[in-house]
Length: 427
Ligand code: SF4
Ligand code: SF4
Image 1 (cartoon, helix red, strand yellow):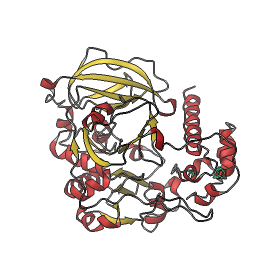
Image 2 (tube, helix red, strand yellow):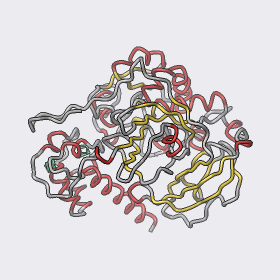
Image 3 (cartoon, helix red, strand yellow):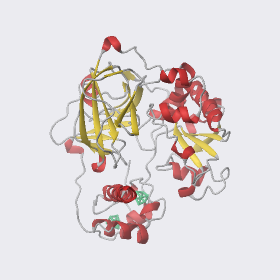
Image 4 (tube, helix red, strand yellow):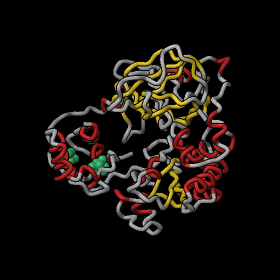
C-alpha cells in the first residue's frame, strides 16, 4: 500500500485477492472455555436470563436480559461460570457470559431449532440464526419503512488484507447455492446477486445468483458503494444509498444458513483471517466464543507491552485490550501489530491540506467535519458536515497529513448520537 507522493493523487489501496496457493484453514482445538459478549438493552432492568451454575446445551440461545434483546448461540455445551458487565467498543454496554466447556456433553444439541428447521421461514431465521458465523442480519425484512427488493451477497471482505469471504466463494459455492435457494424461499425475493472480485466471477456463476464484479480498489466492496455503483441498473433508486431497498449478507453467513436449514444443526465455527506481527496471513477456523489467546498460542504468537490487537482490518478495525477477547460471529479479521509498527497518532489542529476531502468516496467536507467533532459538536456535524452520509471507510484517516484520528472521532460521534437517541426514546 502506497501513499501518494503528490498531494493531489489519491492513494490506491486494493483488496487482497485470494490465490490458488491459498493454504487450507488451520483448525483450532476446541476451547476449554467460551465467552459471549451481548449488547445489554438500555432499558434493561439487569435481570439476566441465565445464572452462574446453569447448564447450557450446544445451540442454546444465550440472552443477556430476561426480557429478550440480543442473543448468542452456545457453541459448546457446559456450565455458566461467570456473568459480568463488560465495556465493549466505544464504551458499549455489554454483558460477558463465560461458559466452562463440558467436553462430554458437547454433542448434546438443543433440539428446538432442529424441529423448526423443517419449515424454513424468516421468523425461524430471526429467532435462531442471527448469531451464526457471518452474523446474518434479518432486521431489514421486519422494518415496515423498507420494502426489500433485492439481496446482495458479499463474496469479498469489506476491509483490506482479509480473504475470509472470498474463501467461501472459492471453495464452497455449493453451500452458498443452498443458502441462496433458502433465502429466496423464505423472503420471496428472487433478485439475488453475488458480488465478487474479478478473479471469482467464473466460480460464482455456479451459485444460481446473478454475478456482479466489484472493483479491486478500496472501498468498492462497501455495501453502500455496491448499491450506488454496481447495482444501480437493477435497483430502482439505487443511487440513494441511505434508502436502498437492498439487504446484504456475507458469503459465510449464507453458507452457514444453508447448512443450518439443510441439516437442522447450527454451524458454530468461524473463519478468520489472522495477520501476525510479521505480516503472515493465514485462515483460521475456530469455535465462536474461543478466547483469542487460544489462537495466539497455537501459532506461538506472543503479545508484549505496547503491541496492538485489532479486531477488523487495517482501515476500520478496532483495538481490543485483552487476549481473552472472544471470536465473535462477525470477526472476519484479526491483526496483531508490533509496537514498533504502530504509527504515531496526534491530536493536533487540522492544517487544511484538503487530502481527506479529495479522498472521501461520498464527498463529505471532512476538514469541516473534523473541526466540529473535535469540539464535540455532534449535532452540528450532522447538520453542517454530513456526518450521517459517512460510510466509515477510514480513508480520510489514512491520508491525514496531521495524523488526526478522524476515524475514531467519527465512530465515537456516531455511537454517541445513537445512544442519545435510544435514551431519548426510552425516556
Ligand atoms: S470515513 Fe467517512 S468521511 Fe472519511 S473518507 Fe470515509 S466516508 Fe469520507
Ligand atoms: S483533517 Fe487532516 S487531511 Fe483533512 S484537511 Fe485537516 S490535516 Fe488535511
